[in-house]
Length: 207
Image (cartoon, rainbow, N blue to C red; front, side):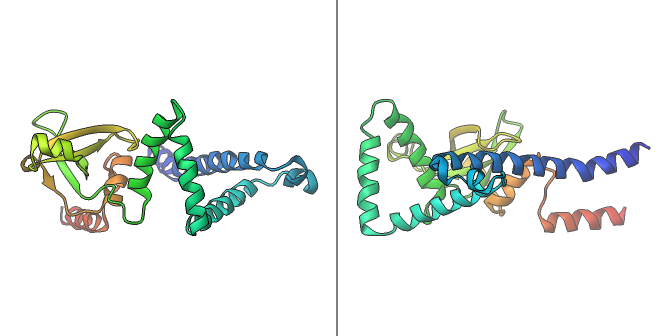
């Protein structure tokens, strides 16, 4: 009985969480429809509410913004908008921080997380997954080039974590990509690469 119950949970829990996240995301994006004039909103002239129309509007707005930002006129407008936000008290502090992170992680040439490392954390006898990031010039001048900047994400939410400067000699570079490392952190080590899964299967069959 217990075995069947666990098997059923393994089927329904991922599905339930997936649909919950999708529903939450769609409902949030549907709020973008409130930006339209009342007479333009689909609910009014269609007479019914169709979930997901806000997703389409959001995608269209993002694409148009990207298209606008790619031409000279759009770049000048964005520079003006950027200058304006950076000169508003309080807003400028939040905007600068968020923009620096987004520029690093989302830019085509960005080097958000270069390498996946193992670092000794939270104590010398333990190892944690970490991502190597860029080091500010002043930090390099003070500590020397042998120190590197690392971000240690928390489990199961990798958007939070700790930022440290550690001696490069005290780290181990892993031959895995950033995506797989994130999956491992989010799943608390349950998700492994195809090669590791195959190796585990062979090992289990030999026992």
